[in-house]
Length: 125
Image (cartoon, rainbow, N blue to C red; front, top):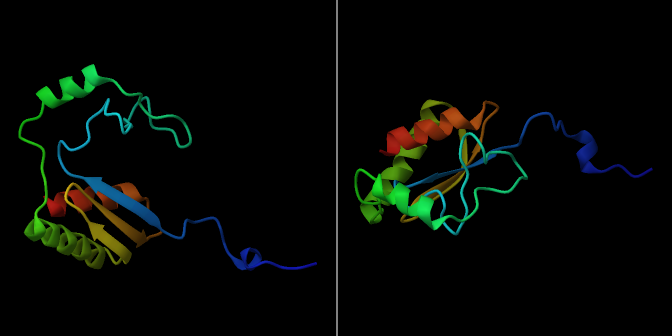
């Protein structure tokens, strides 16, 4: 019988999380790229919210300010903020990439990712 490296790993906890945060107003419900919501379209492996231009246009009308785009200075601040959160919470930051309208981070944590994501958003704001 051959053994695989998987036999020696505990798979009860994820190895890490990919956390993506988006800038305000840059991806609205009903967008052709697809979207999720917290009530109906939020099940892993299931389809997201279908394209709906009326919903997208309605969401756009409710924006309180123009969509947020990050210039080089803002991208640096967002990256520093995410690094600060990880250091403060003793979370391993594996990778980070901040773009003009979103940021990706890969973290090692045994805790749920949602509070960490909320902290990323709050510190970056």
